[in-house]
Amino acid sequence: MIQWLKEGVTGLVREFKEGKDDLSDQDEMFRGRTAVFVDQVIVGNASLRLKNVQLTDAGTYKCYIITSKGKGNANLEYKTGAFSIPEVNVDCNATSESLRREAPRWFPQPTVVWASQVDQGANFSEVSDTSFELNSENVTMKVVSVLYNVTINNTYSCVIENNLAKATGDIKVTDSEIKRQSHLQLLNSKASLCVSSVAITWVLRPLCPYLMLK
Ligand SMILES: *[C@@H]1O[C@H](CO)[C@@H](O)[C@H](O)[C@H]1NC(C)=O
Ligand SMILES: *[C@@H]1O[C@H](CO)[C@@H](O)[C@H](O)[C@H]1NC(C)=O
Ligand SMILES: *[C@@H]1O[C@H](CO)[C@@H](O)[C@H](O)[C@H]1NC(C)=O
Ligand SMILES: *[C@@H]1O[C@H](CO)[C@@H](O)[C@H](O)[C@H]1NC(C)=O
Ligand SMILES: *[C@@H]1O[C@H](CO)[C@@H](O)[C@H](O)[C@H]1NC(C)=O
Ligand SMILES: *[C@@H]1O[C@H](CO)[C@@H](O)[C@H](O)[C@H]1NC(C)=O
Image (cartoon, rainbow, N blue to C red; front, side, top):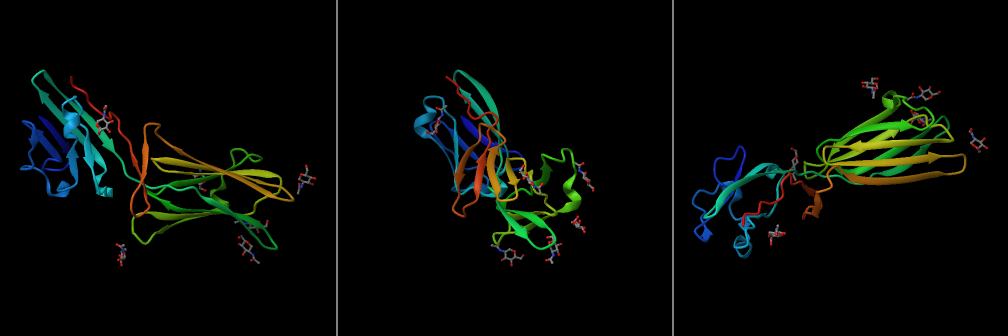
């Protein structure tokens, strides 16, 4: 018997027993969206398939297994979110130069921190402005952060970070040019990525990805 449950949800996510699916206690919110891999159950693989992933699917899932040879259980934490690599632009005017960093999609709301190689340890919160603008799907947000009064011959870094990802950008400002370099890091090496139909990047973050009973 395989039972998948979700913390805080009354009904079951999925139940498989006596060689077949039993949907009698399945919760409404998982109707038509879950499956076990029947051919894999025989080899002890109780993985759950979840389709049409929604933000509300984030949470802790529990899997209980009973076989003739024993029983076991596993917890899995599933997180959903969005992140994107920011672009850097330079706004120039007569009095000062500023750096504008824009990332089209983040969720949950990230923190944005600027730093400088020359003024190490300086706190740039007074000379920067960060705004979060809700995108049209009402979930993810566009992040815009502007750093004012940029000085020449300095390298600035800007870190945008939430619980899923960290985007680091280094911006080197000299008399003649501005060099930029960005990279995005997922905060869990086990994470796997896929792109949903609304082009939000979702992250699956299993703490205990599967349970094998043989
Ligand atoms: C269990 O089955 C799923 C679906 O076929 C597969 O993606 C996964 O890798 C399998 N897990 C193991 C541990 O074999
Ligand atoms: C120059 O840029 C700074 C910072 O972006 C802004 O506060 C100021 O109003 C701008 N000045 C002009 C003349 O546009
Ligand atoms: C920077 O200064 C602001 C207030 O000006 C403060 O809220 C913030 O915690 C400071 N950040 C760091 C990293 O010290
Ligand atoms: C930028 O520098 C100018 C001139 O030094 C100053 O008047 C202005 O307040 C500074 N802007 C910010 C946002 O600190
Ligand atoms: C987003 O929210 C606004 C205001 O609440 C609403 O008018 C709009 O239909 C929502 N859009 C979507 C895609 O749900
Ligand atoms: C920046 O560095 C270059 C080369 O080291 C130097 O020639 C230039 O004067 C510096 N510019 C400023 C504004 O400090």
